[in-house]
Image 1 (cartoon, rainbow, N blue to C red):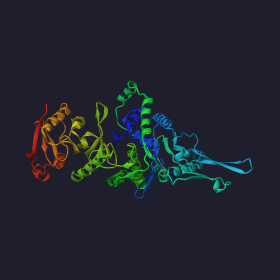
Image 2: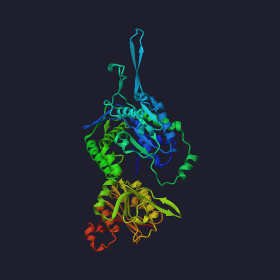
Image 3: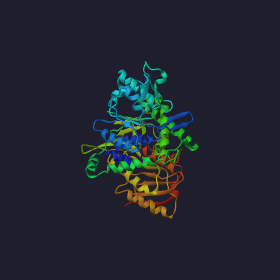
Image 4: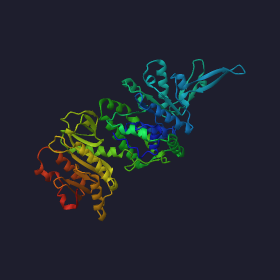
Length: 527
């Protein structure tokens, strides 16, 4: 799964501040970024239709022993201290510690005096070091603390916590509105159905470090060779937070409302298509997903000092994932039913050592072959099963074409030499791009393609936008570039033709819109 971060301001500084390295930490870092910005707007009331929520993002982070908990805790405490936010790392989970109490004393006049003493929930932030017992124990002390914690994390203004001893009148009871943000660390454990059904999990962003087949040697070297000025990066990130102007309210444009509707439904439906356990959780937390999306959207506006939430095709940080889903669903309508269409990795053995490809946007493979791992639309497969690999871009500008070609060609090299009737189909598909035919286009495209292919070419075709289609002809080691308004159609047609085992050349008029040679712009002969 991809976790883009370029749209999050000062994300790199936050990541550096932790000292943790490796792509496996990006999901946790991203959740932490949203959590720390949410500290600025805990009492904001976010409304959309009948959705009403506040600005807080709560974290539940699963990390194994030695997985970086200490580094994350240190970073959180440093940021909160520089922001002047009250916080605590409790050593006791007694309910009275969380909610507080009313102290009754005799006054000078002999009459009882009642002094309310608020607990941890009245602070800005609660950091819990090891929360498994708090989340799972059936002992009365923990179940009562969980009850108060659930109330506190409900939407602000509807989350009053109260505490009253039996010997105190109701008018003297302790009562207040918590606005705290919470981060709970736990070591990985099997989550029980009861924990899910009690509603504790859906109040948090549950984050963890995924298990990835990555080469750690470069990370080890970086920790030795590269120095980090922790004070400087913390100062940079907190200066960014301090500079943010908190808006009086948040509002969505009409376009944002339409996009929110489309994207939230896509998120929920995607979750329902995954494993049976995930499906059950999504069905329980579907409204919460919409609430969280509204929180994320508000924080996106907040980082730009704005209360106007702009969600549009040009503003979605996750638009690439959305576009990949669209293209995958389109391919499924045409591809042979014997093939599976998803995303994931390819793993193969090289001289007794397992090697893994980079993550593939669209992975098409023969489901007759065994699968190493699957979860929803995510798969890890071996090279022999692979029929096609597609790199998907929302917008591929000409200055980025070389890098995309080099990346995909490396995957082709990784797949080379497999025992298949024909090599896998490799393609780049971009929904948009700055490729208007003109005198400079030929030189620019030729330069980018030649620079992107080091020795052998494994790429079949490139669809740069709806008008520019590029096809590789291995027999003459040359690309042809077409000014073709049916570029997307030719992409699908070439994919079908390449992945179909049966002979269909005599049916080409059914699959290809027309003779593209009529619209050829130029050829690119490779070295």
